[in-house]
Length: 154
Image 1 (tube, rainbow, N blue to C red):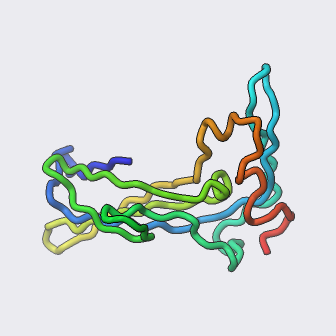
Image 2: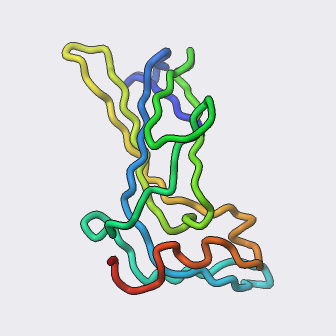
Image 3: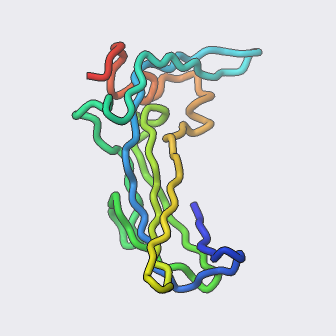
């Protein structure tokens, strides 16, 4: 993915450190069932429980991370914008969590002003399923939620 940092007038902010973090907002329980619609394979999602905020089970952990430029991964990473205010980043997650976790990606940058201020932006980010996996007739790792199928958030 790519992001660009600009000021209120749309002017690129070059050479700025931008710190990104991932936060788990919620999980879903349930199943995906392969079906055909008009002869084309797809999946039908049956959500049995949605667990967000205070209802988030203590056992729920983030299955997502930013890919570090030097290899490895982390839930927090700092990038520097280029001359056009842009930076590229990658998010990695296990396929079994696709469709079952919802996160937010938060960006924080210090703005040179008096007084010094932090600018924050948050992107709502549900983990999506690859189109080829979604349309496959074969069983997939995400067909049953890794959190189960029961009706409660425990």
